[in-house]
Image (cartoon, one colour):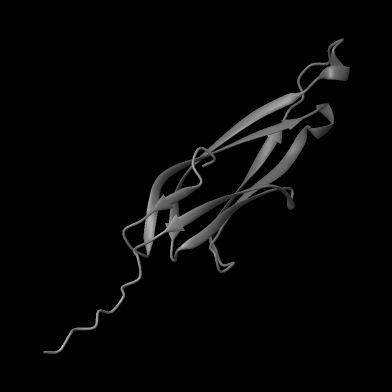
Length: 122
């Protein structure tokens, strides 16, 4: 996600397989310790369709003369099969220690509404 912001499906419900969601966490020595990372997939109506949480244990490493500029850089790659139940704008919410840190939206289109045709009578 992030490379594209929209997709089209043939019908609902659907699953968009193997979506890669890449997140880059940055921190300092003071951020070392245990943290909870949570992903929540929300549909256009505000319903949560999927959630996953995991614990991160960050270690600061050895002290150096560069401690004042020490920065942690932790890439997180989640491979997710995204459930899609209706057309519209979906949002992936990312929380760290129950605090929102990021969100990204994806617009999902589906089949065009069927328009009834009116037959001509002779």
